[in-house]
Image (cartoon, rainbow, N blue to C red):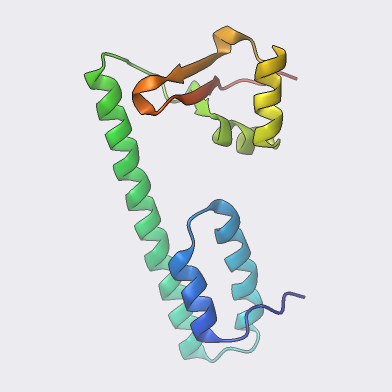
Amino acid sequence: MITEAKTLSYLLDLIGRMKTADEIEHIGKLKEEFYQHATTDEAVQIGDAIRDRSKELIETARRESDESLRILTEAGITLDTSQWLTIKRYAERYGITMQVVTNWISRGIIPADCTMTVPELNDLRLVKNQAYR
């Protein structure tokens, strides 16, 4: 049992600071524990906070994505985003760690023509969206 979710203010603070998928998943578990003892008003507050923070994160991701695409377009680079993933997204999609993906790249398991570095985006590394093992 998770014992972290002790107070409403503690959980609201965590929600306000969540940024990563792991943090969101962790807060989801804490929320479920908290709901077992929460009043209806507290449960509504938590639900509203999660919804509002999720909207903020989605909007931030959209802005960053739009900015990245603008930079690529200005540099004359067109990219089919359904075929290329960041190392992090590739690892998430195929259920492996980022370290495994970078290891596969360095060992040639993921061929060089199936990776791309985008200098215009701070040397962002992309991997072609396909299984390699």
